[in-house]
Length: 199
Length: 199
DNA sequence: GAAGAAACAATCAGGGCTGCCGGTAAACTT
DNA sequence: AAGTTTACCGGCAGCCCTGATTGTTTCTTC
Image (tube, each protein chain N blue to C red):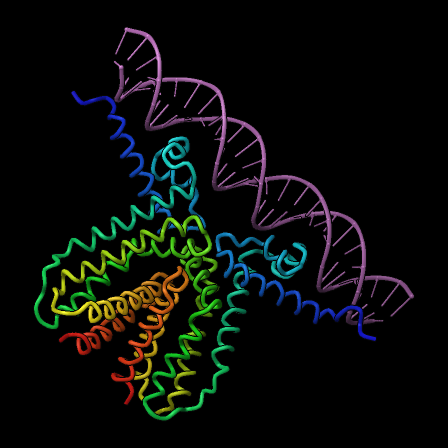
């Protein structure tokens, strides 16, 4: 027969995961301002006592949610085969990869946290190292993808140009901009980038 | 002798302006989540009763704040002489103009409202027409600046590419990114844009 | 198997925020 | 000049949210 109840460690891990996932859900669906610990517990199917046992304060919960979020985001982006591709298509493919990574619901949650962190010192302190890690991993991912054929300067400039453009487009998508328009702009940028950087 | 009390219309106008300015102040300094009607009244030096008289609900106050904000933003951007400039420098100058318009504290307030509006239907409905107006005015500003030498397609694509990039950079600036880096990226984009679009 | 630790449940108190209401005085109207 | 409308004031009640506390069940360890 199966154990009627999981071991402590499994229970802990499961409950924490449930809470963090529910937190991200709330961020995406309700936004930071309307995300309450109550609602998080409700969605996670966990009592408020349990939540407090694992994450004493709301800020602590958020801080761990950020980490959880970026971990998921990086995992999703690393799924793609980072094989060093040949030809100028590398650039276009890299842009598509970034678009996949830096848009969508996970990125929406990150955006909520960023904006909230601007005026919340505690949250800001928690986010800072994680942001840096995300930036470093993204850069590494591209180094692996493009190979060592290009110098760091030739790589980072287009990379961050693309990331910032995509963040602008993701913002536009968040507030209900026209997806076709976003795509059109991304295509245009791809054309330009290939012409400019696609040696 | 001066009138001991202003006329009703003057009083109304003054109080509403005080409230709307205070609202924007709060958005920039505290963020949407921590902006309370209490704090707005405190900063405006207005009683809560007066605030409620002019804007019955918080959402109504925010909706008017958006309009106030975009009006200010457009005014600031229109200050620049929209003279039709010659040469390829037009493009570079246009990018600078957009950077001035779409970054800074006013843009921060807009960002707060956008993110809040994503999950607040009422706010969203209030913002939508104003966003469209901002987009149209921006486009018109550029038509005046570039003259009719370029077709709408040649104009709008680089325009919105630039705007979205700048929004990404503004977001980066909001959360404490390196200003030098932002400038470097903007310069790079300027170079590319001039080469691509600066006929 | 008994004691202690850990996970979880349920409820409470404190605090802030929003919206509403009755009241006052000045400005407009006729 | 009386009446009406408008701007404004300050307090109150209801709501939700957060953090704390106490009690219960289950696992671990000796």
